[in-house]
Length: 347
Image (cartoon, rainbow, N blue to C red):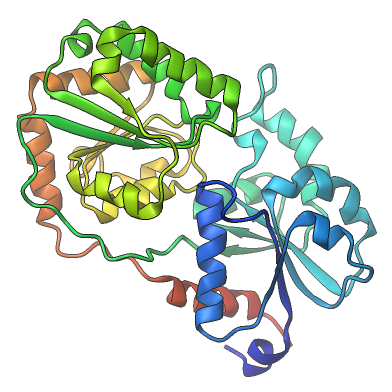
């Protein structure tokens, strides 16, 4: 790593308030910034309104959250050559396109004209970096997987008779919660299960109409209400307490560019039952640390099998606990890698 780069290159993050709501993107931004500060690197952080009022964009590196993608569409053509603009690719709509759009068509028409103007990209997974390359974007990419900023306490005395499942997902369409709940309502096995509890954690503020449909379905079905407890948005420490008590992590997301809650579940040595989507497959060794399935009916079918044969869950749990290391790194190390990768190729 070049010392001149560490001392002289300005880095600015243009991101939403990381405390406004709990999301994988906000957690990633906050922890990366904290990691950079912890190793003594001076950076600037501002939201879009503050950035947009800056009279002169100086030399340096600017990292923009994808939540500002619409604003950047009009701003990017005006940028100066002295500034290097990177997009932090937490998500792209083409990965889960609106109805009546194919992923390819949406990307080419709505995203590519803007994305090609960036000098580079910061992604949390190789999956996302490959997606950009496959779609004709060959500019610089920094792949920096999220780190772990806590020491998980592994509970080795969990119940083996009952299924204590946890879902950590904001109530938005991409997370697949509503079709999952509708499938549960149709399952006589799940409806009659006495050994299943499911804890749902995540904000209902991002897509309120969708969230309301999910919560109303739980409220109106008495059997579903017995099984599912909704806890809203919780702090990281509160979420960790659910990981400690759970013996199954459930993901019904149609698309994850990384899947930070899946990473946390792995850190707590939880078996994972997950719908395949994006980077999810890189968190699960199918049949060894959990189960990967192709569609929502298979998620419910696998859950039904666990209700009938909880010993299957015990076997997976024992296999995971025997692992000697989670092989995760911390955010200080991640920050150093970020600077190294950003500085590669400098003269």
